[in-house]
Image (cartoon, rainbow, N blue to C red; front, top):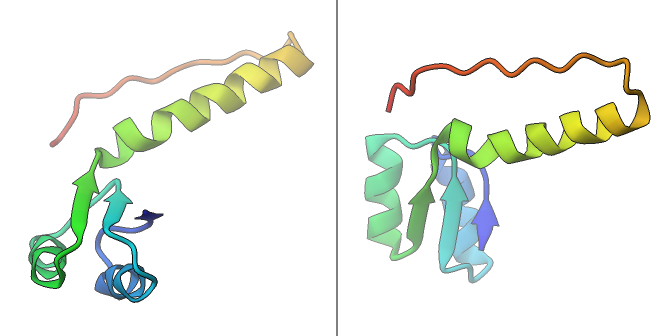
Length: 81
């Protein structure tokens, strides 16, 4: 398994060369979906929100544990997907 940018076929090529069977990304283009299919590698696209929000929330929690005076605000937005 390799993770990375979904708009970059070079990273999909690298994953195939390294023997990976799955590529996980938060973005895609039509060309990268077609390229992954052509190369025979699984492509999991989770969107930026769903692949990154957990890391940011974890960081916010750790910062708050270190300094309770830090104010944390979560901004929610409509999904454009």
